[in-house]
Length: 190
View 1 (tube, rainbow, N blue to C red):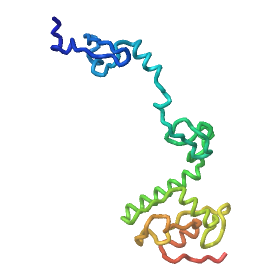
View 2 (cartoon, rainbow, N blue to C red; view 1 turned 180 degrees about the vertical axis):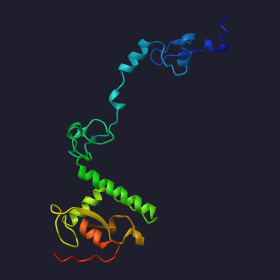
View 3 (spheres, helix red, strand yellow; view 1 turned 90 degrees about the vertical axis):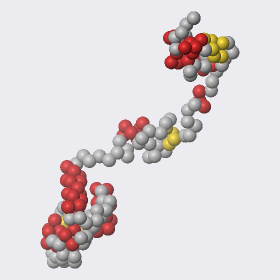
């Protein structure tokens, strides 16, 4: 009599396909608890008779940019064409954008150091603010190709102004430095 692991060695199960009884042996003890077929051939016959399309998700996914059908929903939600073209990716390729991003991070660091309210403000928000003001300085009314716009806090951080979208305006470097920490903007005659 086989005494390996008590009486569990001789336990019988019934195959789901052919209804024949089969025994557990030493080499398949770990698999036996989840084993439902007597051999591989019965399992293959059962497996090939199943509708495998039911196992896949029936939900149809679409690319969020071109609205083309995609097979499965990946993290970006883009089809292969949009993915390879780079549509929807944020590219910081120019050194100018890198500098602006560093300035925004520096202003946020200053705001945290001054212990003022830090709101949500990103480089995209800054570009939206510049576009809304037609890429012009609000004091001297010069446009961006001739000047470089900088981030100015309407209520300065030194006077407990918050670092958020509502407290930021585009000014050129000259106007921003002449404004210093005043609440009212200076008007330049030019």
